[in-house]
Image (tube, rainbow, N blue to C red):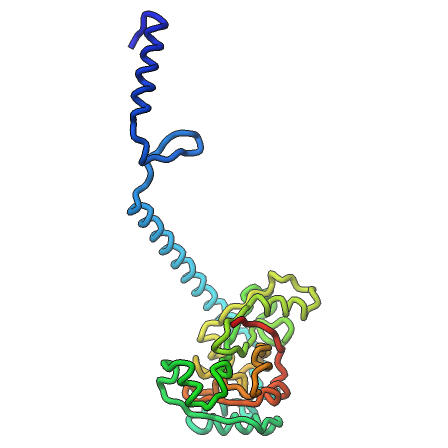
Length: 287
């Protein structure tokens, strides 16, 4: 459009501004450059959110697979002397507690405990659906003092350990640790990280400690025990043990943990356990 005079041009601009002012921008939002763009609908935003969640889940799955493969590779290089039975915490018979079935596992662990000055302990067989029960029901069948006296042993792997740390030969800076915690508590890996940093006099950077739950296959290969049967007595490999400080404060001082088989549980006096296993005692949980 052409304008013959300045007044005509001004009138045209006024008309165009008026048209724009009457437009509905309720479904728009401002971009950084000041332009307007229609907002996405709730359906579109929801779809995008679900796509992001799916992508994050896939990344987490791939990270888990990578960790499992790394653990398998590292385990294949473990020196055989770490699978020995010479240390007091480990089976005097290299095959006894790892391959025996039925009462033989109990007999093997009993022999280890008694030969190392542990006398206040007890074994209890539980039904196959034990882990489907509430903590209160488990407490009752074991005769435990409280649900807080029910504990578990979990194997952790330091995913940030230097490439030359592939085994448990250095307890202060081990590739793997086994932690004993209560079922009623929440494990705090950060406190263990800080403890190990201090234990090494700050000579190893904190970023080199990143403890995560080891894959079940790795745990079984290191300990000789399957899931829900893990105990730190008679293990296949010499793994440093960390005992949560909350267990030390239990009254009475007698707690329960895995007994080498899924349906076998071991109750043990806390003081005798500490004297025998000599664990690192760390406040590594919260209620």
